[in-house]
Length: 427
Image 1: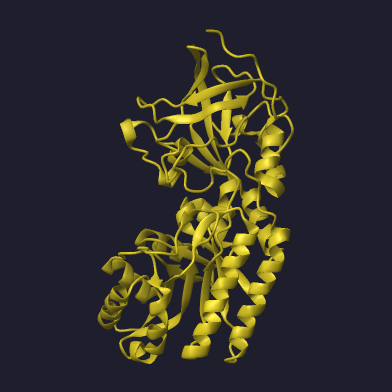
Image 2: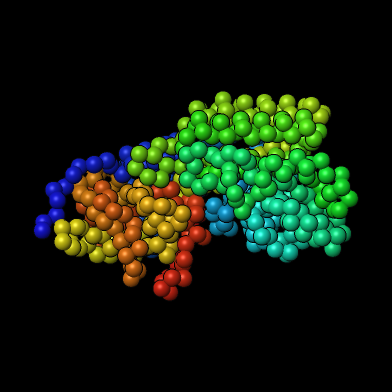
């Protein structure tokens, strides 16, 4: 069987613009994916590799701040990408860090700038994590009443109060989110109906060594639905205002995960922050009013990871072989799922969907054929793309997977089949 007739399609430049929106021009010229005028294939010595773009990180944070009111700061969730040079760069851009492990707390503690607050979230935290957080004044987002008891015991051992925020499992989820973190039964957070009783016990908790500083609010992630994001944020504030009325508790610290998503798949479009600006303004106004009722200014932060760093990263791989098998054209590449598990569809996806791929040195050429891309591993799970539209590529050509700055290198089984790891670069 002969391969199908070539189908003309979008150029790499068009794919870049459709995927990254206002961040697209951080990636260079029309002919090649580049930084500061130099093609990536000339800057990186070999593939596979992850490349993170400083200018794109700067742009992502600045673009977000341009649409936020003064009441809202930004926390970077290190779990999205813990590459140390990237975290160090982010420290100069944001207002604090959210951590998910002892190692992340230690990393953030070494890079945080004066005045930046750290927090740690996650179920089943260890004794070492509780103790380190208490000793360093890091806010612990408590996920259960049992954890509150363990934090109190650790505070007694350390001999100082623990800064604690209650992570709330709300009675609603974030509609349209790729990963639901709230609503229904969850391992994350304390069910919202149990929160008022804990808030009313705050003075008793203080005697046990717990300074109840605030709340951690997170219902879901990876939503591209502006209306759903706005409704979820409004619902959070309804809860806070109700709790203030019934328990007289006003949080000094408030961490809110808005769940802002990025465009990964065909048909996805980047969130329009101008559309979300009124939502953020309304959130800021309600938070300010909440604090004014008690004569305080609430230290409120949006917790974001993927939204800040995904677009600043690309995964670079090279075509090793080109073959036709029963009518399907395959590009066999030196990179695969051991470096980029999410790309293969094996990280939380129900069904695998294509990611945006571009030919690094042929960005101005339209797609002329549909190909399947596979990696070097001896498993049919090692998929980079299915029926993917690209210019006609040959061995030696470079391919870049966009939106690879989050949940890629650190979220992948790099030891699988004992292949080499992908080197990471920040330029």
